[in-house]
Every structure is written in C-alpha cells, then in structure tokens.
Length: 560
Picture 1 (tube, helix red, strand yellow):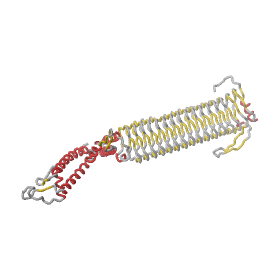
Picture 2 (picture 1 turned 60 degrees about the horizontal axis):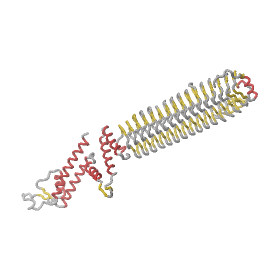
Picture 3 (picture 1 turned 180 degrees about the vertical axis):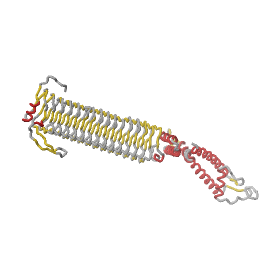
Picture 4 (picture 1 turned 90 degrees about the horizontal axis):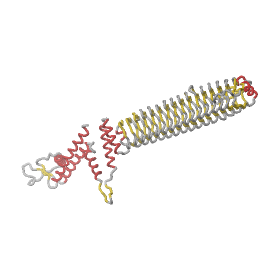
C-alpha cells in the first residue's frame, strides 16, 4: 500500500489500551503513530507448548484486531502473543520492524497485500486457522524460520526482498500456495516440511533457492518456475509426485541423494548445470523434451520406474556412470552433443536409442538384460565392445552397418567382423526360402546366396569357414572315390591301368588323392575312372574357387 499523507492519525497508546482492556480494534485507512509493543501491557500470561515440544510463556490477546489499509509508522511487536481472535491487517504498510516471533494465531492471520518496509519476523510462530499473505511485499528480510502452519497457507504473488527470505525448518502441515511468488534474494527452505501439496507454479527465484533436506509429503509443483540462481534439493524427499514441467533452472541444480517416491515430471524443463548423483527415482522419471545447457550428472542414480529421456537435448557432457535402470530407458530422438558416459550402468530392461543423435557414447562394462534399439540412430563414436551388444541389439540393417564402421574407425577389427557377420546372419534369417508373387511360388535366390556366402567364407570375414569347407569337400570326395573304387593306379611294371588290376587303396589313400585333385596337384600314375573323372573335375574347380575365396577373405581380414 502506498503512503497516504492525509490519513487520520491514531495514537499507538489508544490501541494498546484497547488491547489491554480486551476491546475490539476495528480501523480502516488510518495512520498509527508510535510503537505497538504488547510486552509493555499487563496481559494474562500462560505457559504453552510449542509443536517442537518446547515450552514458552505467552501473553494472551483476547481482542479482535481488524486494521485494514492502514499505516504503522512505528515498530510493531506481537512477539510471543497468543491471539485468540482473528488478526486482520490486510493492505497495511509497516514502515518499521514488525515482530511476530513466537506468536500464536488461533483465529487466523490476514496479511494480504501488506507491505513490510523493514525487517519482518514470524519465526517460531504458529498459525492455527489460516495464513493469508497473498500479494504481500517484503522489502527487507522476511523470517519464517521454524514457523508451524497447521492451516492452509497462501503466499500467492507475494514479493520477497533481495536480502533474504527464511523458511528454514518451517512446518507446513496443510496446503501451501506460493503461486507466482517472487523471491528477489536467497530463498531458504532448508529442512522445511510440507505435509500436503505445495505449489510454486510460475514462482520466480532470482537468487539461490535452498530446499536441502526438505520433505514434500504431498504433491509438489514447480511447474513453469524460474530459478535464476542455484537450486539446492540435496537430500530432499518427495513422497508424492514432483512436477517441474517447463521449469527453468539457470544456476546449478543439485539433487544429490534426493528421493522421489512417485512420478517425477521434468517435461520440457530447462537446466544448466544439474547433478542427480545418488538420486532415487522410485516412480516414472520423465525428462521428455528437456534441455540441458551445461553438464548433466546422474552418476549412481537409481531409476526404479521408467526412465523417459526422449527428445532431450544434452548440449554438453552427460554422466550416467553406474546408474541402475530397473525398467525401460527411453532416449528416443535424444541429442547428445557432448560425450555421454554410461560405463558401469545396468539396464535391466530395454534401452531405446532410436533416432538418437550421438556424438560420443561410452558403454564400457555395461550390463544389458533387454534389447538395445538403435533404429535410425546417428552416432559418430560408440565406445562399446561387440560382445556387450551382440545378444541384445535389435535388428536394424543400417544400425549394424553403422556399428561395423564405428568399430573399424576405432581399430577394433575383430568386433567389426563379428558385428558384420551377425548382421548378415540376422538378415539371412529374416528372409524366406520361397515367396508368393501373383499366385506363383518363387524361390528366394537372395536367401540361397546368403547361405552360400555364410558357409563358404562367413560373409567374407571368416576365412576359417573356407578352410573348414575345403577340408569337408576333400573328405567328401575321398569318401565317394573310396566307396566307388573310382581311382586306379598304374602298375609298377609300366602297364597302363586298363590292362592291369588296380592296386588296393585304403581310405587314407583316397583322401590323399582327393587333396591332390583339390589343390590341382594330381599324381601322374593315379587316375579316376568312369563317372569319377567328372567328380574329380568338379572337385578341382571347387578347389580353385575356394582357394581364391580364401585368399581374398584372408587378405580382407589381415590387411586393414
């Protein structure tokens, strides 16, 4: 309320006399000159117990006090008063200090639209009926430390000074409303207890906000709140839903060791430096659409519910080391413009990185129990070994090929070969041998070609497959020669095979002959006869083909 120079003047001693006599005080638009100090009055004294089990002596004020739109030009002291009737000071201006320390408001406290020009203290006060501070302006320190609110509290659109606002260790046992409140200086809510829902919707914190160790037993809303300084929620306990949709924290956001029992909603929130080290998210944690302008740390955090990070923008470094993801983790469409580190983390369900854009991601010593989806993901460098991924990667051809290139760029050539081999196997298994086209059943030659490539050379990355196939063919042809007596040997006397009986050949001799044919080194006096001449020709042709294939595959895998 602005100062009005022509207000009727009332002496403070007149008000004190009426208070001492227990008479009601009903005034409007007056200027009160002098100090209001009830400690000078002869009022009944009682011993009362504070909610914190402390005892104090209180002066009983029986008068109903209703002074509206007025101006207190002197100090106001209701410290340790017990006001049995309502106190209504709506629209008043306090030019000097206002002290309500340890006061007990039994009939409600109305301070709507008040203006406190100097220090205002409600420390240790107890509000039993209602506490109304909507639109109140505190130009100096406002102290509500250790105050107890057993009633709904309204600080909507209140303005707090640049000096300091203290709600440290206060207890809000009913709903608390700080909607669109503005804290120009440090706001201290350290160890504060909110027994029911609390709203900081569109609240503005221009300096640091300290909620360290605070307990939120009901729904907590910081929706669209703006925190320009540091926001310290270290060790805070949220027993119901936390709503930080569209909130903006421009300083350090500290959630170290915080506990969030229900859903934590950070939809499209904006963070600068943020630290969730050791935090426990027992319900769903949603950061969808949020933006992290500076480093983000989630080291050793636990996500017991779904972790939703889809469409998030991480513009700097991100630390997810040793994090426990107990349910699905969604990073679909997320942008990682700096290095993101998941080393040592545990994914007990699926990890969704589809459409993500990744600059550098580290996944060393990560444990995966579900699938990893890299569908349409774009990554420049993925630091993870293939054995970590091979049993969990959801099939996507482009993702496999990108991973193969990624491993080669890091000179992990065995991982690149294994990844490509697994990709071809998955591609082959997804094809059918036959398919129907316009009422006709056709053979899928692509699947047959894949099968040949797999058996012959492991898709070009398994030269040992060529060796095994060659050995198998040598033994197979040797068995055919042996069973059909398809080989004859020219007698030692020089007679041709047609005029002398063949010498008895055992199976090892047939293997020897088959190997010579396979490697194009047929013995001069050993001859296939009959149909076995054509088998020998086929074997020799296969030998040449497999030898060439072996050299190509070996060169591909050894010469990088």
